[in-house]
Image 1 (cartoon, rainbow, N blue to C red):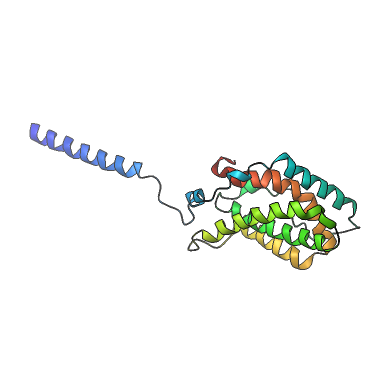
Image 2 (image 1 turned 90 degrees about the vertical axis):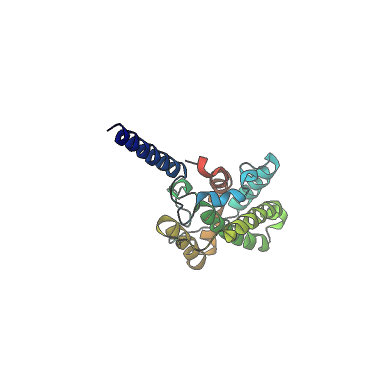
Length: 195
């Protein structure tokens, strides 16, 4: 009887030890692990220098005064959009698409005789976009295609660039500019801490 009890206790200890080692291994990996973004250093974009923010503010104020009447069929950047609603791995993808549209529109505005008011902001945005683009394209593509909110947001940005008037796009980008620079960029740079 004593031998049976000792043998049973030994088996219980072995099973407990095996269970603990499995538990410490952590959850099963998802198809798009959030740790994949740790190689991407977005932290330097958490806040822009006062000089850069002033250049953006000056450009926005100047350009807003030159806006003609505009109307939009859809809202490229809806007010209720919040990157925190996306999974951590989806946020840089959404921000990269947002930056791409912003650069396209501001680049067109710069070409349309806005002078050098956009030189510095465009330089900063191009740098951010190239960093994000490199990071997004370096991530594994074996995971799921964008679905849900991310798919909807990407589709909305794509459709806006095809269907909306230039006036609508210009106004939308200008009104969204500081949200992009302060809220969206900071959220992506904060990773898991953006909740």
